[in-house]
Image 1 (cartoon, rainbow, N blue to C red):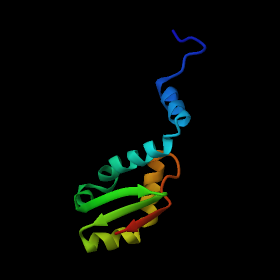
Image 2: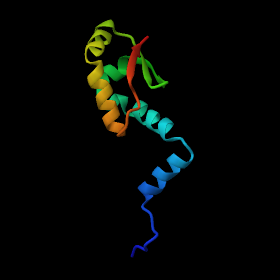
Image 3: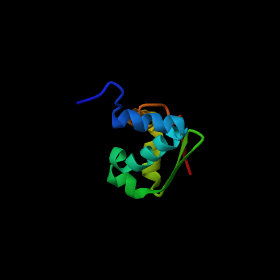
Image 4: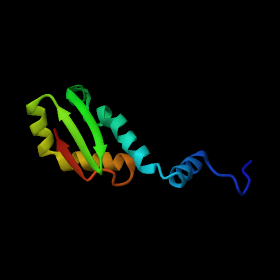
Length: 96
């Protein structure tokens, strides 16, 4: 039986992330870990380097053909990644 001051685990973790000001880093890590799931194994296997700095997603792709395809659909990718997190974590994609 729930008491009036009980908090769900989801709410407690969310509050902890806000109190310690680590929500942004948590969301960035979440995006990096879900990259293969969202983009598929073919693109994930050809992604050699991926990191986020200052709301920019930096990617090093070994295939120039895949890189050009990703450049074309970059806004859709940004939207999918931000929807996964639930907030705007990425505003731009940079290909190295």
